[in-house]
Image (cartoon, rainbow, N blue to C red; front, side):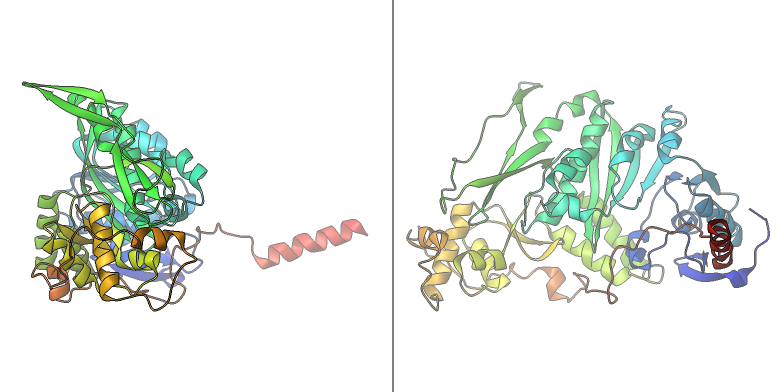
Length: 476
């Protein structure tokens, strides 16, 4: 690349403290919707393995203190040219090192403990699964992995189970209300499985479902003893095809024996062959990471930081909203939604606050989820949830008979074992709703979503015309 460039050939894009020169020809990948994805804090020695324009590397260099080195890598010639150009334009040549190379080879070449990176950022177009093996080996002990995946059709829909299994070693549940949380947990299970092969274990700090992608922040430690716990942190889920009730079953269990711990295979299944609520059969999903996917102390510190740095982040209002909702989430896998429960019984949808109040008044815990605005995450059993819904139908009778629905008939023919108390509970309305935070994103632009892959530079129209003329002459 020439050291000089004509600034008139480029558009300028500013995010945070970084301004990049973006080619008008659009031959380097950039997606403005992922501004939220770029607003995060990291560490000391950083590898951005798939850097594209180099924007994130430059932001790290300009916005984080005490950064020694950032290796900004991409295997595209156009991308590396862009990185070099933007590094020079932002005057961060002493920190950011542009590099052309295969991301996997770069990570494998830095597996030595003395060469490992404190932070590795993976933000590919699509799935991060091919890069996980190299990442878990080349991140330092106690280092941070920041991983983005945009292949939500594979991770969420259940319509591409074979692709999800091939990429992540897990199977999603088709059309489940908690599909985005399961996507996070399947990804975390893939990271944990990759790390365990090298006697390494993971500690999720923050796991976010954002717009059309997911992003997780995971610490990696070397610990043979912690690796033994991996099976007990991996579960499968039985999801009823009729009433959408679910039950999770860990693959392993830890049993204390004095001062030592014995690791055993778990027993199961913990459900009958047919659902005891409606008599339908189950779908089986997983395995997935079933331990907490957020670290409460880390989330608290992040929230305090963002509140103090409102001028620093363009998306700070949404960041505060999402982090607040995450801080309110119960550390349990999966949830119901008020709409799914009502749809099963073909009744009016109970207000979320009303339904949460009934659960709290019965003595159970309940929260919402950042992955679904209608989520009901609770430690109450399916039996309790459906007794509450039976009570709701008694108070709000169905407008017409639904004799054609075997599921509705089976659920409602059973009398509730208690009288649900729908009196509004003081804790049913979370803080994030009370203070009217921006908790769930609305579509930011028309036709928004994942952008197409960057296009390689094409031949000019004149060159194409010349070739066409030559072909015509030859044919004559």
